[in-house]
Image (cartoon, chains in turn red, green):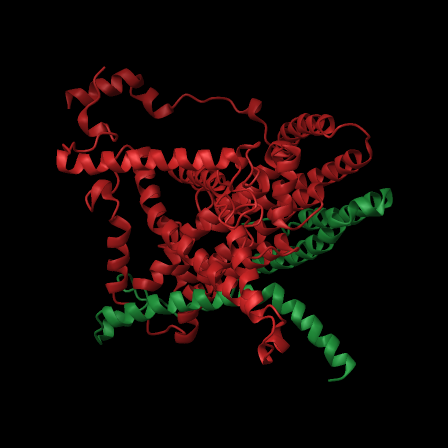
Length: 474
Length: 132
């Protein structure tokens, strides 16, 4: 069976590469392979272990820099060392480096992943997606950014001008700060605080305020309705999200993100495998927090135009758009950290830099998010609220009780850790399936009572074949 | 410098060393955003025209200001949210020190969760969760 050309989204317009382009490319490829072999030899021979240039963990280089700076400033006290302690210079310098790292990472990710998302959704919807600007449309995000910067930002006359200015800023800052506690490697995280989970919950709920300010100050009915819906939905889904994280904290016994990952690396067990229900709850609640499909009622364009950012244009709209995508990547990172083992991959992190492993997991999580966006329809607001309050909260509370019970068994049972973990995996999977089914039936879901009705409209004209005949005659 | 103020400074020192990095990242983020907004202000055209300022420019003129009364159900959901958020705040420290306390912790948290679940069930029964 031949597929027609316009249905095939895979094939790009073919361009023949000239030898002048191919020769440098081949040289680059050979050089890249040689570099990889050299690195592999270095790693296997163990010459990197313990040195500051061990690039498998960039935290080593930062640590070396910190010590060097401490040596320089140790004998020169000043008012700053009275205020901030003796290590103030090394602290501030490394913090600045880390902040620049986060900013540039988020910037690059935004520019690349906007293209990835549009191409992927194009592929899912059997079209091509952007492919005109640059090779394969790779420069499309730059074109979009330049366009958005050049656009006039309108402020409606009835708007509260100060409150109208704030939200794009307030929504962007948490989008950067959530990246701070993410562990990229054993010693490579910007802010390794011992209350990392609470920090995440606190920072991510800040954007609710900004969204409500945006909707309220626009003086637009659509914007206010969108903000109302968004706030109601976001606060409702914050509860199952924190309860899902509660199971993680309970089982690993730490709120420090690096220790949660370390636990998974030590036990060779992903928490998402151990507690699939928590993973599902976290992921679904996160899509609600992100306002992404299937939970994107905040910007249900058929009902309320664009939701809370209806009145925003130009670069301010651009900031909203960018932070939406950046938060999606951050959610992929948190699913990777909490449930998919973070930087660890069953020993592979000894050979491959752990941050590359982690980046792979982020990419996988982000792909699932884009896939959901391209596939699923939108839920109604009442369905979503009911799902949070009547479904997710009760079953995730039950799951916390089960996990607490398992945790005390795990602590006091005197056998190798593999046996209880394997047992709990089976128990939790069975529990997840049973409770999902039971609670759905408890809420009145009865699939066997619904009888399939033949479509009456088609039958009234004599069946499907008659309808087709009528169409061809006409 | 007296003894009390020194201890206060020690606490501040701890606070700084933990969260000064957050402050630095926030400032850097502000710099980035303000650069983008200022660039937009410099590059984008601007023209004074009365019609542009109307709410939802291309649609019908709105009746009344948008900031009107808010549905009662939002208020109920907000109250329920506060209850459960406080619950989460209480449960997190419990989850951290769970192993050290012993079996009593498990039963006490069962009672705590049961009381909250009873509250949720009551709200459910009363129809506070209904969205119409």
